[in-house]
Image 1: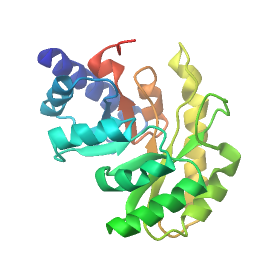
Image 2: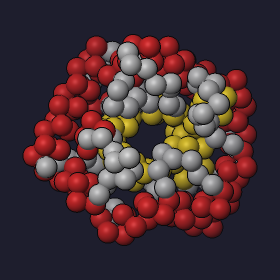
Image 3: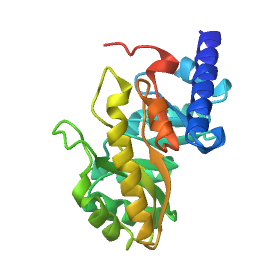
Image 4: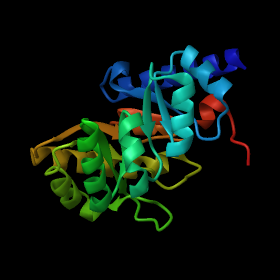
Length: 231
């Protein structure tokens, strides 16, 4: 299994590099995140041994257990929905939170970050498709939310995250990635305090190459590294 995971990671990195080249960027402009929801500890450690240095978790409690076991030699990012009552733990264990989508949560994260003596790096999750089944601030409300968050001294907005609809054809996701990149550019033009539009967290196993072509800086890959999740 170790050899297979290592091989899959090498293939993904090669495809990322080619897609980045097509967008006129170096491969180093895009980071690979291993998404480890429901993945057993041994396979996660195999991916880390194969060079993965960024892990994405969906749940605070599951991440805390894994971090206690595996340590902080790699970055741990929260990519799942965050309840306000988990903010206290989240700011202490994660390097970045990708799923900030409302001012109430931002205020709680700011308060907890101040108490912990940290400045928390966050991405604003945008529901770029407007689907009811997707979380995130609406495309139309995103800039207003970011303006409000920029006033919070213990949060640092580093960019945007989205999850487009599922398509059999990855090309169908391209307009959603373009829309997020264009929103990033509009936010950057505002030159807000504590807002640095460095990151576009977009693209998963089925569409990451298209996402990279459209400017992704972080791609979130689970299935293509670890195989299908158990049902």
